[in-house]
Image (cartoon, rainbow over all chains, first blue to last red; front, side, top):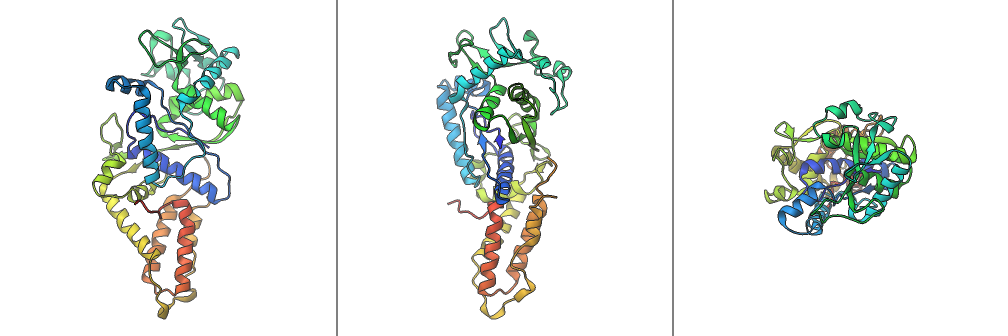
Length: 327
Length: 52
């Protein structure tokens, strides 16, 4: 299972953790059913956001990324999220990413622009758009398109180092750094090989990220590269997506400071189907507290020897188990 | 993904079960079994842990 991990440029918020808790539930469920799970979650510690944050703070990239990576790992521990088998940091696999870009050049899927950036040519990917429904025509209309590189049809695999930039690595493609989509593609191929059973992330990753990284993997490994995609719907705050952009987010640390426990947060995040939006409220945290109290009391309840209820109560919550089986 | 993990149904049944068990007068053996059942399910839900 490959899951897109955090970009460590800031603290993750509970909207991000909805995705990670849902993935944890999936992982636990698969293990419960007896599957052996090899779970890879990348840590994006090289991209525009991390570089920009480091510049603004006037510190090195590593100073920023290691601080927020530590915070992320602390938070997932507090939320009782099982550890993945691998957490590859993008910055530790730059050569594999450059090599992937080179291979795509050799295979005719990519080209070098005048800027020395290396681009993937979307038009060469026969099934591009299969996941998101967004074909190259959609890309032409997309807001994110930068017209200078005709990027509507292409996306960057390797970004050449510009004057004054210091976050660059040497490679056969020249000095530069990998594009975001190539990070996940290279790490997925490196750790899970040429087929992946499950790839997962928040719903906002369907396009362009998963569409693009899928195109890269399939250009190398053939189709289909991923058997199942699991995209988790957003967590909402007062009916709107909880996000940094909208500044309507809460970090786990902030919620703990208000007197709630990470367990209560975990329970709220579990209480909704992953393909439906979930509203986050403090009232839900209060209700979660009451439920967990009941659970804790039952687990520590002293026996009442005098009044056993006998066979009327089966010692198993069969309905709970049924809910966890395949429909 | 065609097969859904229906956690809502599971959680709803889980709390119903907990409420019922709390109200019941259980023998020591029954309590042990209930605990065992809850902890078994908790392998999936991950709700029984100490956050310090």
